[in-house]
Image (cartoon, rainbow, N blue to C red; front, side, top):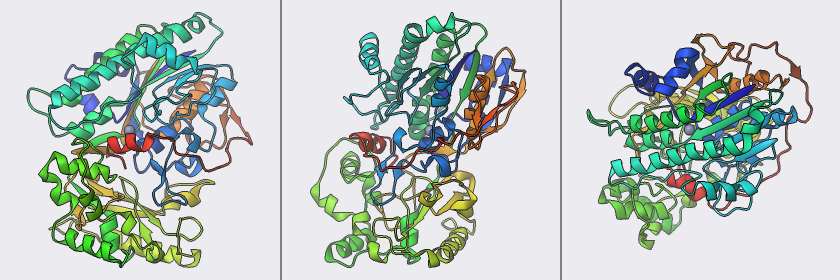
Length: 537
Ligand SMILES: [Zn+2]
């Protein structure tokens, strides 16, 4: 059995199917036409880190412990997560143990690479110059020698010519495709010719996510930058498929979909107004509060252009996505940030780019004050109030619902989950909680025109796969891959085997080493800057 997985970050079924029906994306269309296609529901909220973690483990975040790009246990700053933050065994581990050859290229949340029967070249948070940039370590050198243009991530958009940035990220797509072909030929082709050997190869494309974040609103009659990037990904998929043995199974998956963003709901400003988040009373904080109130804040100053954004980036916010690296110490002192929060009197806060609220729980948070006796009452109160928030100038509610964590997640690491989750109406509002307060307003205009939707896509074709529709959860992909390779599925997995793709009679295993005990991991140098660069922190 040979399986090829094409992971296209942020590919939406509606956009991709629309392009296919207009004659674009011929290779993706071939997979769709020959086999199954449908919707792949992402994690809630649909964040890249947790979603790819669930993809490669088959479990919900309550079991793998990755809820966000940041692990906030014991630190309000948070530590950027990586593969070591995933607290269950991956499907790559199980497949390797069963003798399957595994080859992964650029999948997020695979750094530091684990030992597999094959190779892993990790995804975009791989630190530069780390000694463990690939497994086996020799591959880093071999790959960069053979493909000097190979990059672990994609360059961010600094404003200016959208066309030249799109050209640049398309070059990373084609370098990624070349790297895939190099690795397949060097590391896997021998196994293809051995009928007794199973092989799985996966390649991930990130440029699809970046272009939709930054250029969602730049579509004109002449040019759709999103399609431009998807066309280049399609071309690479086609050329990789040419290397595949004729009886291969092809899977195309995304971690979430995409859509427009109309406004940001600034969760921390709302919590402040409701009295759950308190600022320090010192002179410095008071001055910043006053300045923020009269409009001297990041959001109002943003139109001043590149310089201000540069300063904002220096402040650890706004990500450098629109500017150069100029800085100004005065501004650094002038904006309200988590440094100004009076944690000893704060009950709740948010540190996530889509819809989380965390209670300041004693014993879990760095300076937690809330005991377990009062926490559920306060939590219910916050949920109720969140559900009453209306969009500016209307009586339309901001969120469809708010829910306590146990309604969304389940597992041994539930304690570390954000305590409240809410779903903004039509997902056109972004529930955002950053290090900075950005402005004194509850609603502000978005920093970037596009953001994630829960609706991802799945397509599959192969000798035993019939034509039709399949709708699934991202948690189902892991157990399905295991069953495709006749590997028993651990009973702890939440996802189900998609029998339309993996028709073999399922077998299950009760392993008692499925969970990996949690030990705090160190943040790798450079990963925070990369996430900020992509506008995630
Ligand atoms: Zn993503």
